[in-house]
Structures are given as C-alpha cells and as structure tokens.
Length: 591
Image 1 (tube, rainbow, N blue to C red):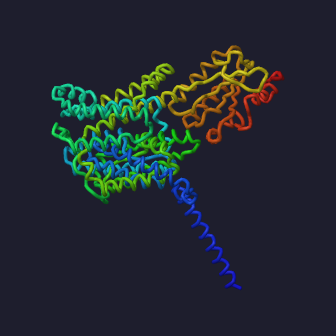
Image 2: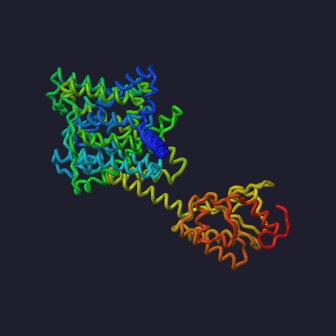
Image 3: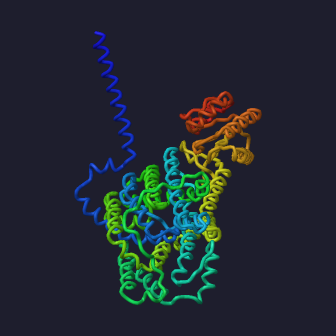
C-alpha cells in the first residue's frame, strides 16, 4: 500500500513538473513571435515576401552604405548591419512590415561622438561603435525587464518634428562638401556651412553636375515610382559611367574595394573606461532608435488595422543590436523609409526581412567587387534625398496655427540640434520634454463643478456657465495627481475657489476621479486640510477616488476624520446624504 501511495505521489509530482515546464516554455515562446505565426504561415504569402525582401534589399543596399559613411565607417558596415540585424529582428518583432537598419540621425550621432573619442584611429573607431551597439542592446533588455516602453511618450510630437528637421539639416551639412567635392568640416551645422562657403571657390563642377543630375532623377523617381527602390538603378548607372568612361579622371572620390564575404564574429571592447565613454551616446541612440522603431511600426499598423506590442519591440531592437555588435556592424533601429518600401512591396510577414538579409549576403559574397567604383557623391545624394523628407514644413505651419507654444518648442528642438549637434540636441530635447511635463503637472487645474440641469451629473462651470451651483456646497475636481511638488499649489487653488463661493459653506466635496496617484506628501496635505475644515465646521467628502489613492488615504487615517472613502459614492450621493442629514445639519431639501 505504501508503495502505491509513493508511486502515486511521484506521478503527481512528475505531472506538476511537466505542467510547470510546459508553462515556462509557453511563456518563453510568447516573447518570440515567429514561433506563433510561422506555423500558421500561408503558402500564398511566399511570393509577396520574396518580392518585398528582394525589393527591400535593393533599397537598403545603397542607403545603408550611405549611412555608414555618415557614421564615419567603411560602407560595408552598413550592409553588415542590415544582414545580421534583420535576421534577429524578424524573430522578435511584433510588426509584420517593420524593417530595420542604420538610420540617419543615429549615424550622425555616432560620427560626432566617436570621432572625438577615437581621435582618427580607425580600429579604435570600430571598437567603440561595436561597444555602443552592445550597450544599446543592454539598455533595450533592461527597459524590457522593467517595462519601460512608455519612455517613448516623454518626447512630445512637437519636439520630435523640430528635432528631426534639425537633424536633417545637420546631416545635409555633412554631405554638401561631397557635392562640391571640397574639403570642409566643423563640429556643428553653423561651422560646417561656414567652412563650406569658404571652400566654394574650389568646387569641382563636374562632380557637382553629376550629383545634381542624380538628385533630380531621385526626385523624379519619387514622383512617378513612389515606394520603389529608385536609388538602386542610379547607383548601378553611376558605377557603369565611372567604370567605362574617362569621367573618373575629373576628381571623383570612390568608395573603394569592399571585402568579399560575410561579417566576421568579433567581441567588442568591454573595458569600464570605454563603456563610460560611450554610455551617453548609447543612451541617446537607444532613445532615438526606439522612438523611430515605434513610430514606423505604429504608422503602418494603424493603416492595416493591426496592433503593435511596444514592449516587444524593445526585445526585437535589443537582439538586432546585440547581433550587430558582434558582427562588424553598428546601431540599428526600425526606420520609416525602409519600412515604407517593405510595406508597399507587399510584405506579409517578417520573412521579407530574412529574404532581404539573404539577398544582401549574396551581393556581398559574389558582387562586392562591382561596388568599388561607386562615387561618394552618389552616396551623399542618397543621404540628402532621404533626410530631406524629415523636414516637415507643412507640419510646422499647422503647428503654428494650432499652438504657438508647441511651435516654439519645435523650433527650440531644431535650433539646439543645429547649434549643439544631434547628441546634445537629443539630451536637451528630452530635458525640455521633462520640464514641460513637470510644469503641466505642477500647475494642475482645479475645477468648480455644477449640476448639469436636472441630472445627477456635474461638470466644470468655467466651460458650462449654465450649470447649477448647489447651495452651501462646493464641489471641486482636482485634475492631476497630487504630488510633493504640486500639493501646496493645489491647496492654494482650493482655498481660492472656496473664497470665491458666495454664502456659507457647510460641505466641500473633492472629486479625485482624475487624480491617478497621490503620494505621501499629497495625502498629508489632504489630512491637514481636513483638520482645517473641521475647525471651520465644514464637512469634507472625498468621492470617486481610485483604488491606490483610497488605500493610501485610509492608511494615513483620513477616514477617521471624514468618514468612509468609498468607490461607490458619487458626487450626487454625497449631496443627497448631506441634505438628508447624514452630514451635519441638512434642511431636508431634495436635490
């Protein structure tokens, strides 16, 4: 009998272990979306994903090479980043069309910061770039673990519009010397433009004409073939012209030989001093990369009535950057331009990213030698054309009409990028976002509520002057969380509203339905205020408080002074209770 019980216990224990193992695996696989949708993959999708992947490869090949030059890296580093980053990204992204690769703003941030740290040492430059990608990956994983995906909301749309416009102008200023084929430089937009003007007499007009024609063809291609990889035929044509004519004798700078073969595994520098040096850059790249990733993913998800898991995209971006950091690449993120090409080419699933990676691998293995005669001015044209679309003049005009404050916030972001550079521009823009957020929270609106006609509903009399005030009762709604830095301001506004109320006040009702959080300092303020009202023989009722708010107020003993704080009591219930004699002296008046 004992043996039977023992065997039965073992069987139950094994069953529990098996269930726990299955639960763990199911939970783990839920963070790898490809395991969810790949078993349901439809055969009819293969054609579209193949077309989209090859089209995407045709687009990102010249674009990634161009962005690598902006980052101060050899052109093939951009290709490597797309090859390796796309594969890992496809496994973890929750989006069906989102494409990943180097971006313009991140490339310029990398160049401006790593350039100062590497001091012209190419090997050092590559080490620090790889380390930056690794730290970006770690920041993504940390943000995923602590559920910090809402970080993207700290930068307002107005700041983003201004920042992107400033970043575009700053990037263009780095590429203009290649148009004119002159040696010009500078630490920021103003210095670069000034340097360019000084060197204009040295302009190579053949290169300038060649680049201008290429840019014109890109613009025409955009008009007649929107969403298509127009840049690829221009790249092929420019290589052919430089290879089979004597035009190269006119001083064209060429990209040079690209090594044949796939990216090699390498370990980034892991010294503490190096990590400390690039951490600020990595934090800015993480922030900008995540914003670009989510913005691109959401814009296409909305068009197709799909949903995006913003937290999951921290994982996809993290693994993509982890892969590039060990594979001769640099920081990557989701991008709007490549996502547009992928989506408009008919991509049905992230399989298109794997196809893109395979196509780029074939190019780098068998056709790398054909890219050596690609003129740098063509890469500059591709960069200028891409980033110019970030300058939203219409949006700035619209913003000026709707809100002058938001407009000047955008202009501030634009100017900080131009004057201080992209990295400091990001930091200052984030700081401005936080200041504006704190300013809004620290100066909350306290509304005086009145009854809407004969109903049991109440709203702000400031916007609805025909609302009816209740005799001897003041109803206030605090429209913000009550925190240590705004508690005194809220108390002052409550006093001001009470002073404006005509006649004797016997009941004050505080509606906390819009106060999502009350900290200890805020709850102490309410406790002290209730004592003050008690001395003045004024009753206090708190209604519509959320669970966390009610819990803290109860712990501080506020219920002992004002009575039960219930989620079931509305403003009308409190008024009825007061006039029926439940609170102090009522006159029995029906309301």
